[in-house]
Length: 84
Length: 271
Image (tube, rainbow over all chains, first blue to last red; front, side):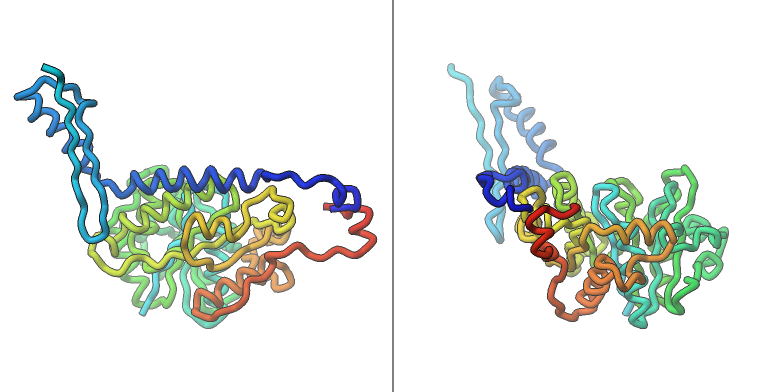
């Protein structure tokens, strides 16, 4: 830094702070995915097949969410049934 | 009790081999019998950084496949009594390393060494996986840069789930963060992530910060681990990191911009 920089206006958002913000978001997202067990996609597929035996649904109408609550995990199953 | 230490990062070119050579040499300097093992099969380079490239006769894969004994393959360091190198093979066979074979060699090394430093290849393939699999502690080498930090976080995930310790339900691998190629000047200007930023994102214990330094290239040119350059900032920072690894608390150095003189400040010095 020299005497000219000293009087120059300081930029509000530096590239380093943008980097930090981007990293915090992507790392949090990837950590969330990491904690889901490997069998979850297979479980979802099989659940859809079972439900399909009785009701005609698309695979995207079933949501499987595994929520970690410290000492136990909750498997949440959301099925949107078609209008009759 | 022997300790297996993996030097890992995910991303390439961040300083894993430089760190393996420096930390291994630093431990040997302090009287601990140490071996540094190169896991980068096909791209052997630790030997060059340690300056023993012309003395490689047998390598890691030769030992695994039973073509050579461990004592035949271990290369004794020219400078230090307690330091040995086990070179990687230059074979292109990706399956040269097996979990069982590496495990056997690790068990044998445990019998005669205090510290076994595993220099991991970049990526998350077999070599990187096996380098971390048997580890007790891990040093995650990270540059203050987005792709390196993200990859380091990915490695932390693998360390926690894909190791012998995690599979056996033992105490998890102890993780250390080593921030390398750090420029305090650029951090001050807001051009580079600071130590606190990386610590906050990765949330692991900081082992050390190695400043960006010309001494690192100078050392690798000559095949002398940079920690032996006691005059250099990087060498001193590595020494501090080794002290901390051995449980001694020492303050972090080289985190602030070197002060410039008045005239230099006024007219702007050479960056």
